[in-house]
Length: 143
Image (tube, rainbow, N blue to C red; front, side):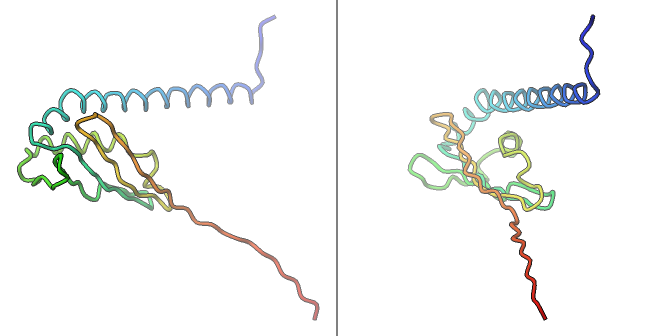
């Protein structure tokens, strides 16, 4: 006799498969961004004397964005953004968005800084998540 699943078991299996597919596609998207950074963006940034990139981001209420990007050389001095070709800036920002925490722009949102070290090829994200806390209480008085 073949295994037959209850409707709840079928739904659970479908949800599990959907989540697995979602996580696989998210991982593949991130891997593509990492490959683009490694192969194209980081070498081009190094050619512009950029040692680190710092991108501030924030969002809430279903809207979020990169607030600003700073480029620094090995001494920590700013590299003038206008010396970096616009197509490279756009490629970099596209890659940065792929690393931002999923849902940082939803509800109360979140903010943080993403740093790329072009010398070590490391990305670091310092993220803060915002949320509303509610404390309920009930009081009763005899009159």
